[in-house]
Amino acid sequence: MRSPFYLAVIGGGDAAPDILELAREVGREVARRGAVLLCGGLGGVMAAAAQGAQEAGGVSIGILPDAGRSRANPFLTYSIPTNLGYARNVLIAHAADALIAVDGSHGTISEAAVGLKLGKPVVGLHVSWEMAGLRRAATAGEAVAAAMKMLGR
Amino acid sequence: MRSPFYLAVIGGGDAAPDILELAREVGREVARRGAVLLCGGLGGVMAAAAQGAQEAGGVSIGILPDAGRSRANPFLTYSIPTNLGYARNVLIAHAADALIAVDGSHGTISEAAVGLKLGKPVVGLHVSWEMAGLRRAATAGEAVAAAMKMLGR
Amino acid sequence: MRSPFYLAVIGGGDAAPDILELAREVGREVARRGAVLLCGGLGGVMAAAAQGAQEAGGVSIGILPDAGRSRANPFLTYSIPTNLGYARNVLIAHAADALIAVDGSHGTISEAAVGLKLGKPVVGLHVSWEMAGLRRAATAGEAVAAAMKMLGR
Amino acid sequence: MRSPFYLAVIGGGDAAPDILELAREVGREVARRGAVLLCGGLGGVMAAAAQGAQEAGGVSIGILPDAGRSRANPFLTYSIPTNLGYARNVLIAHAADALIAVDGSHGTISEAAVGLKLGKPVVGLHVSWEMAGLRRAATAGEAVAAAMKMLGR
Image (cartoon, rainbow over all chains, first blue to last red; front, side):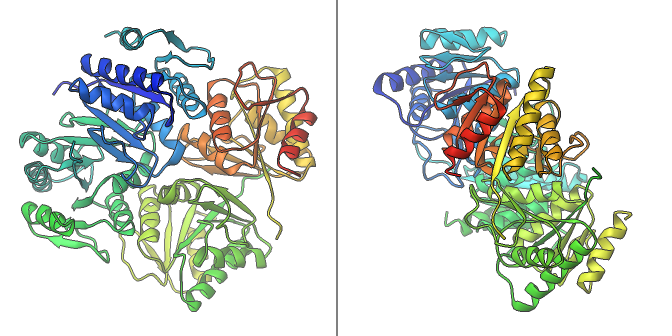
């Protein structure tokens, strides 16, 4: 079986409608490219990205901070409860081949920073924060394309 | 999308041929029942169970102790590197609806103990150790059936 | 500064008076030997052991499963909240040079199993469970002496 | 026993001499205020801060990313190996009442971000990055004083 590749979509659990639409389009694009979508499994950007992946016929895995699945969003194909709280952000950085940050605040920043520390490509879409090594993109398609290119795919 | 259910197969990274055959049959049985197989993602019992799931057309997810995927067994459908070492055993107990231990030693015991602590059904197949609350089974089919029954499925 | 050595006392958060007295005596003995006492930081055996260490003028560090210190027992010298739930048991096994189990059930078993898996000496005092590699002792003094001897101290 | 309070000093494992001197002065100041110094336990800023705490007669605890203590810096009073890699950064954020970042890059940013996410005061000293909620200070004394004031001490 050929090993899949994994793109994480990271962002806030609470987001404005235009951000959610952007995350959904990233999710669709990840699925169209044949990648497995990883996310934090909860609402907001995480749910929108999983919804997009589902709409495009793709697979998503949510790595939850909780002990169980009760807060998992309904669009996930699979979910992994960890009971690790924010330490699950570090797992996402390890499990992803590349990360795409959509907006987001401190939680997203912590994930992006660990991703960069691990040498993973991290692309920012509509992010208001700065970080050395962050590659910016203007559209969902451009973000996924940039991540793929940095991965040599 | 209807939420899948998750059965973990736990056991040693190094095992005798008859144990591996047993784990493979458990993997097949898990897949036949429509459950997602969770395992630790490495070799031995973990690889045999994933192989069985693959043979029966099922899905397996390996939750790896490592920072990356280089030691992931080739039968996994998906893998999640955690960089948590043995703490990933606790994740498996959280992520599984029920656990089936095939043989195994201290690592497996730690997983089974956390599973029982969390109130999950834990079934032992060919295990040489004792644990309060462990349900024993004699065959792969019986083990999966016992886990399903304890889950009310 | 000479590096201290660390003995973990592991056991249930709820225990009978005679078990608590035993844990307290283990705590005193650990402190008399000049070791730092590690424990899970909550009540029962964990609190009794920390109380014993305090009575003998020693130092204890509680590694808590919680996000904060509100459930930390009042006898600890220091406490480290982890927000890791039962995964903190694995941290205790890593941080301890040797582990002494006083009674206890599934949580304690998981800690002892990881300790043995990591090659640490694990001594059982008044434990009702069996585990390959577990060294048994009859008294608090004997348990600590056995752990010290296995550590070559 | 009155519960101690905990100030984390976070920063890179590799740092220029002036940064190390600054971290050492922060360590001294933390100890003079009677706080327990928490750090990541390795070299660079972590070692310099622990050295400062030691010089001022204080206590430091290093929360190590490794499975053992071989890379622990020699100035720590106590050390806790976690085998969690960068996930130990999240533990430091949970264990600290406030965090002081001295210079630092992605690892430090991830810690500061989780600290702010958890609602902890985070003070930046000689940091080249920006983060919403970060309080800046110009000297070691000012940084510790700002952290104490935000804690209401």
